[in-house]
Image 1 (cartoon, one colour):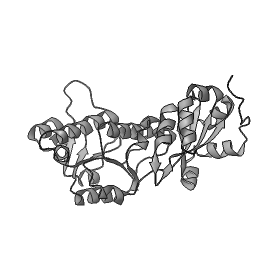
Image 2 (cartoon, one colour):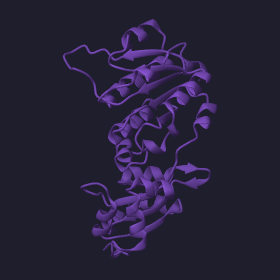
Image 3 (tube, rainbow, N blue to C red):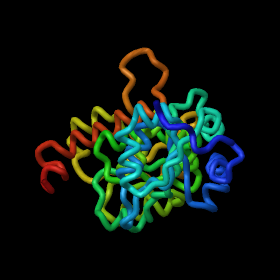
Image 4 (cartoon, rainbow, N blue to C red):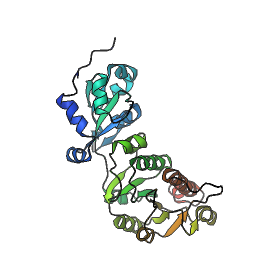
Length: 284
């Protein structure tokens, strides 16, 4: 039989502290955020920054602790405090409709923008004016899958640690450097100084992605700037880019959603960079 819960009341001070992290102002004050589900908790336990694990605490129902014993063991090995709790406690902390029985409290892990520039990045996703947390998390996941070196969220974009953004990243938040709160002008200027070509993704762009690939112009270091799904990128942001590129629509669909367009653009760059003469093939 699994052990009895240790935390039986949602009014426990530890539970109250974790619950408050659903609000942005408390997250910023404590520099802590919530990660829910086995995948996110596993990645948080494995993450290290400045010699510290990303996971600080883990709340788990007895059933989940038994089902995911390996993850709980990894969390304990990382130095996280483990709290067994009943389903009422987990539901009180969780921000999902159907909690999976594991909720982790994690340290902030964003990286300074200057530190990213010092790595001489070759593929970067810049989220400018992206307000939907689900979109932000999904684009971060796409960037991770495409092998991007970093993600930058501008000061006009959603909070990186919004629970919906964390869930949508499906653990990718812990895989690559992310800078937050960077003015878009500073992001573009810094990346240009680092030798990175800036491409703005926009459905009304005057350059066609297929044509750019055919011309062989996409093999060098590249940063893609993605805007708000509803109204795209403002003119002043498009003007900062070296080119404004559209994903061609070959069928009858009116458009692509933000995450899908980001995946197409990032993978196009990843393929070009890995081709003969691309910046990654030269580096490797």
